[in-house]
Length: 532
Image (cartoon, rainbow, N blue to C red; front, side, top):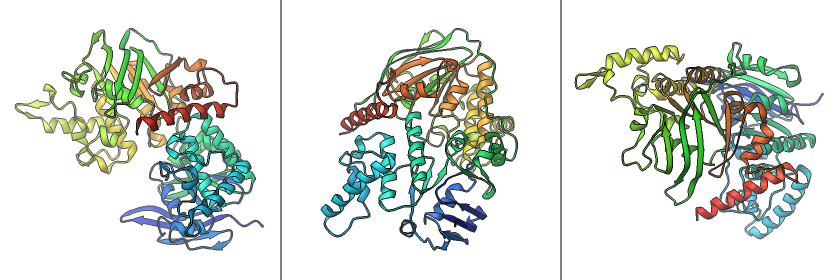
């Protein structure tokens, strides 16, 4: 009988009073792609960190190919044939591909020998696994997809037979993600064992052979992917039935509420991040902005939210607003009926050491309705905060708890409650479900649709194409600070949107991934020149 490539028995790990892993056992068979899913805080990353030697388990045993193995650090994991590709790559940007691959695995004192050997190995790996990357290219000049290939090559160069990938598609275009899946299938077919950590059920169903579900630090189920469904997996993750599709009626758009013409923004480095953006959002509709992170979406939200300056024209309900910063900031934007749920809730949406009730009034604390003489009516604010937390199902519903003590999903609900409950004319919402549990995603989507149905204009920025397609009434795609095109959700698909996200406006006359690679490589080179 075939031995498991990996077997974990009774793994437990606590951080103080928090039990991250509780008596977890799992078997991963060789030559398979094994998915691990679970809500935030379910213990997935802790478990994989134990396997890769970042943490030491409080109890339990690890077996590699049937042999009990101690893994006190990552060097021991590498020696045991385990490689890990992190969500945030561990690459030296001004080194070449070749230099990054041998870094930490040099042989002898002369680098020339190591580089020569690595060049030959990389050539063979590229042929075997379709991992073609120019060995002499600087990392900073490569697209994100190519950088990810370098991370995989690093692990394979170190003779890894087991690969752990943590949220590998978070920063990829759909075409790059599809190409990654083909690479993983090729690795599996060559006998490699893959562990895939992802929160995207579509990816689990598409690429894995087996999937394990974690909830609250425990392993709740391991099933063959072919014998389950997204609905069943979602229920195993959350402990209740979850609506995976957005249930909404057709939009009834009215007059334009937000109009943007020739919007341009130059950052502090002198780099133009917005290059003539023109858009409009009508009452009662959601305009989704799709794109890979770093293509101007963040700057667009910052300008609209009053956080930075720009040139061009922005009108709200027909009235032009100041873009110079002299008479304009977040407070003046709120006075014009603009609410803003920022992309980064920790640095822009919340003050983490402050309580939930304080965070629920930040930005609106000068409202006369909450004043009591010269002071704020703190008792009234706390009572109102408790009502908002109850309606938005914030757990625990304690207004006096510091914001940092809530989970990511509940922190996001606090920000949404603060902005949505002010009944704005325009809601700017960036990455509304980033790092959010699947149960909270369902709730957040319902709230956004509810606001739209009240006749509000919503500008939605998200890197999740499933979210863009399901929530939006119209879709605009950004690439390199420009709008590449607008589409109706019913008249497009992920392939077309993915091409636009990579700057490809016409059907390419070459393989899709090559066309995408060329555009993303050109963009990376422009950014590298700008940063010199």
